[in-house]
Every structure is written in structure tokens, then in C-alpha cells.
Image (tube, rainbow, N blue to C red):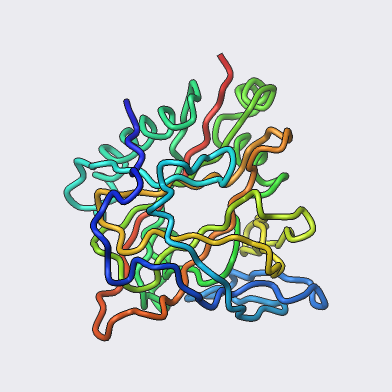
Length: 284
């Protein structure tokens, strides 16, 4: 399958299509050890010193054709899906998961892809959250860490196959797309991975009743370079690298967050989006 990168100026100029400044929520400092608790219904309980910081956020559309998963850590692509109802979990698993696997393999050159879950995010859905339907996350984060990436591979493919996978290069990719569009509320911002310092990255425990997971939160650094794709439509998607086992200088983690666009029109439709997570292997 050929993945079609959105070329520069792939869409006409949009009213909200300029570079902007927006408030992004970061870890302000590490005076309090950050932890996220999923120990009650509804939104998670967050411990830590977090604050909003005004950051420039550039429109990625003019440079979309130059973006690289190995440099910036994300790409904007065009990808039509045959899915009729993204709220039908069975149809998503049967139709969308194979589509996503093909797209991600084509984009990464990997030999194998395992699609393992998806999340639907709906702006304003703060109370009735479950494992699939959640609100957009307004917090700079990365879904996997140096430790939790390999751990998740072992859970997915089993210990014997995991040794083969982890003996070579393993990458985790999220494919994020709007269910409806254009996106006007809570668009997605992505940090250029090459602007990230290892000092900015903090492992944070996710405490569930039955287990503890781990993700990265990010300490504010004014040198971070942020991008977004204004008014995305359902035929567009963003590939986001969440983990790469290679440590040769290429992008390994790509911080991202939902944010409030300063030019969001009154009465804008709530953002509805779906993100699918995929691990890929380069083992023969």
C-alpha cells in the first residue's frame, strides 16, 4: 500500500490555518512526584505540579511533505477508510485495524504490524469515560516509555516471539484521525521530537486497581517546537511515533496534546477522533 503524504498547501487556505500561540499544559517542575490514578470512575486523578505555558504552534500543512517519522516523529497523510461507523467496535476491528496495519507498514517499512487497541475521544466527554471512549487529553505526554514499550510487546506477542521482535528494531505508532470534520475544537498539537531533550522527559506511573503502567510527561522547555494541522478532515490522519527501540539519534518519542485553539468559533462542533495503536517489527 502506498501512503500518500499530504503535500505542501494540500488544502486551500483556511480561516484558522495560520501559525498561532496557544496554552499547552506541561509539568512545571518536579517538586512533587507526578502520578496518575485510575482508581475511580470518571477522569483520572492527577498528582504533580502542572501548569499552562504559552507556546508557538505552527501550521504543519506548508511543510507536510517534508515531515519524517524518524526526524520530527510524526507525519500528516491522506488515507480514506472504508469504515462506515467508527463507533461500532466490531467494524473498527474487522475493517479499520487491517487498514491501519497496512498504512503503518507502508509508512515505516516494517515487516510485521500488530494493531492492539483503539480509543475514541469526544470533546466534553468527561464523566462517562471508559477504556475506549474518553475526553481529549490536554496535557503534554507520550504514550510509551523506554521500559513500557518492550513490556507491552511481551504482553502482545508472548515471551518467545517477543525475544525475536526485541532482538531487532521495534516501533510503536499511533494513527490519529478525526471521525467528523473539520476539527474546530481541541485540535492535536505535536512536538518536533528533535527539539526534545532527555532532561525534559519524566516517567509517570499510571496506577490502576489491578496494575501499574507507565507513560512520559514532559517538563516545559521553551525550545520545544510545536505543530498542528488546522481543520483536519476524516480523510486525513496523523502518524505519531510513540516508541522506537533504536537509540541512534532518530526520533524515539513524540510528545503531543490536545489544546484550545485561540480562534475556535462560537458554537464549534465538539472534536470526535479515533486513535489506533500499532507495534511494528523489522524482524524477518
